[in-house]
Length: 143
Image (cartoon, rainbow, N blue to C red; front, side, top):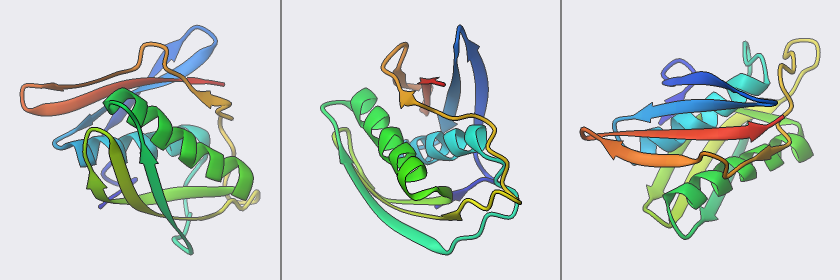
């Protein structure tokens, strides 16, 4: 289980876009940190509750596609349901499938400033790999 207090990522600038480099001790932590890092880029998450709970399942042919599909699904929920997620509990993950429970709340325009609107999660410079027994990933967002 991960939340914004434990997320490990750094923002990277990219011409006309924005990206993140994400780190994790495990694949589960890496994917949790990627989700939380994306939401941290998009919204001031201060005071966001955990009143909305969603079950999310995604699949992909490899880790890069799985990461893109995971973040695209969460961004879809953000756009269509106006919900920001601040806690991730990945219950199952392998190289082709991920199942998670995410916790968050509807955006309150008086409390939660929208910092960036992510139009799409891209495959441009996508990278997921294990280095020295730790996981790292890079993903670029179209803004």
